[in-house]
Image 1: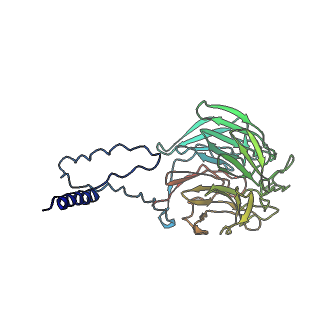
Image 2: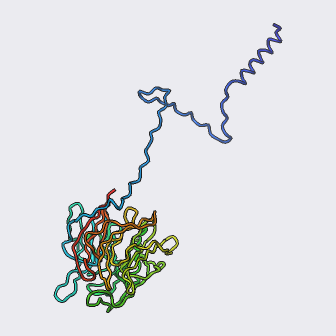
Length: 381
């Protein structure tokens, strides 16, 4: 072959080979060269060319909601004294009961017991925890951050409203006082929302207001629509949008970021079915579906995504106490009935632990009647 032609072929072959060879990617302008990735080590007992699939974590399923048909009542150890117009709360382990009237002694129509009781569901027994500084009934009573808060109510056996905020520290066993309520009153709706204690409605009857000889009604009905919130962190009060309907002996509960205020009485109407909902985001109220059974002197709580309403009373030509147990489901915006309480009562307390609700004390007849009942509603699943 001609030497010149041979040289051209050689050069051309070299150029073609260089064009086909893989090239290193150029780093982006200004970027540092990255170190090489470490070699993948095969798992023991797994061929090197086999890539194991990543483990799959199953998504937890939400707990099934309790159905009304599955609920059952069970009798538990009664309170060691009879009361009515009590309040109850829980820390998730125990039920606490405070305030109320006790049976009369001598010529008194009632007494004002001061014992703060603790109920242990595991032992099914009651313990006298401490003495409240002053007898009070129709009071708000909540647990928050390992403290028990007793707010407002009526003094001793009178219907003089008080504005005290009494705080019991469960760790130290000591009482202290918080900033007093701006509007003293009793028979209040109360609920804890976002770390604050909301008080709605109630009766600010004032000195001299009493029941009649049957204990049937306050002679001076000063039902209010006042809405005030107490912040334990700052020991301060804030006045918020008033509840649309003034009433007392109502119930309230907080869930899904709102406060629901239900039932109650005012100006002779003993069987109100009002249901009003407070939205803190807008500081405003709206109407909710009416309570199926109008009544007052009820126990109300929120639990497991529902609002529960227990018992109650009415006066008038056909006085009675109620054994109704009803609950509101906000997801369906509807009410449903539960099995009735074994003992009809008003002025009772209620607290939920686990899948059970404890309904304690209260009057089996309207006005000044008393019981030591402790009935547990097992919600089932």
